[in-house]
Amino acid sequence: EAQVTQNPRYLITVTGKKLTVTCSQNMNHEYMSWYRQDPGLGLRQIYYSMNVEVTDKGDVPEGYKVSRKEKRNFPLILESPSPNQTSLYFCASSLNRNEKLFFGSGTQLSVL
Amino acid sequence: RKEVEQDPGPFNVPEGATVAFNCTYSNSASQSFFWYRQDCRKEPKLLMSVYSSGNEDGRFTAQLNRASQYISLLIRDSKLSDSATYLCVVNILGAGNKLTFGGGTRVLVKP
Image (cartoon, rainbow over all chains, first blue to last red; front, top):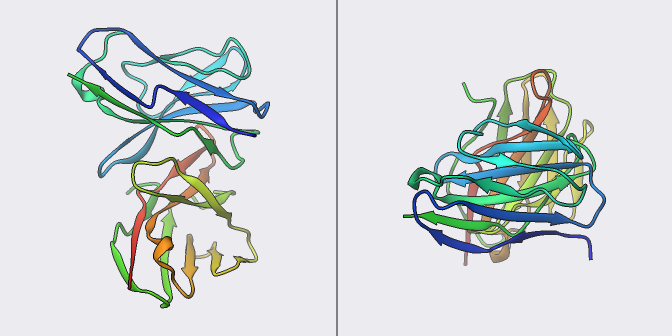
């Protein structure tokens, strides 16, 4: 089944404790992206990747890191999480940046 | 002005009625347009792409008005299961050439 797999679904952590949210797609998509969704602010892009080893900042990259060592995986790293990073996060992929996006099921992150 | 704007609603719709809402975009060179549906705290799912000539998928009809820079979504014979937030997505050319999301329009279909 074609899908984007994102883990974990829920995560509660404390300020400053490094964490990684994993994202994997099995559709051989070149384009992958991370979004955060906050009430009243909609979906905002954090980072995106056009292909392996090619990543770039989105609209709200501060406090986040990504890597794209393999085509299928695009992890989101929070080196030192802060409470303002409490949010609902979505990973997405598509054939290219102009095509329809397929989303993972989301990660609800709470930073205490 | 936001690049992609939507009326947040909610649109309260009697079951069986028709509802329509728009999404405006600021960049006239935008090329790709989509409607996504999002249920509460779930991932957005593609509802339909929007083509220049307009397109229909069952009870859903999408239109593109390039002159006035908006797209629309019309839902006929609303079902309770149509209750969701509908996200407009536009490919913004220029810096970034990326897909940009509107804030969403919430639709509540009631018996």
